[in-house]
Length: 236
Image (tube, rainbow, N blue to C red; front, side, top):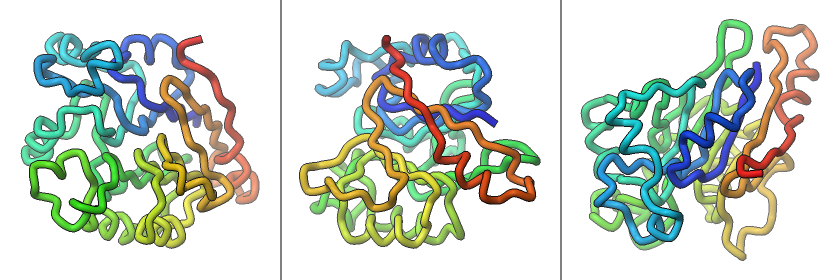
């Protein structure tokens, strides 16, 4: 099975699916997909990244992505709208595009290749880390999200929008021991890799991963396969 893991695209959804390899079976977004169903609600950062992007028009058109897609929320999304979707337990935000809520885990693939993904979206703030219900915490993940993620038995892939290292995050990575750890941003205090196969994926870039049959008798080949990736710029 071939996966594509992509960095922030800031609403360039049509371009993403046009540029992705056609044999990709699942795409995983690491944040800042550009979820703005109402363009009048965009934040200051989104204005800097060429406006609200394609989401609102595609949502109204009933668009379905040509590739099954799983995304964690970044900071530049409509988090109030996403909370309403979560409350309604309706996390398919476009056809074939699903939100992986903070701290939750899911499996993607098929009967022969089943990949366990754990996601932590949004960003870290020490002020709001212990209180998820304040208005300012909409863009921040909470301590309960990390605890929920740590309850997973395993993770083939751990995706965090914000790779800024603090003790709970370091403990989470240590517990889950993912085959691949993906994040989109790290601060200057976070230059040390938590695991060998850690990748900071930049905006507009994609990583392709070719996964062998997980039921193969040669387990070692699976371990090598999941970290044998190549990079390609979406905007080249």
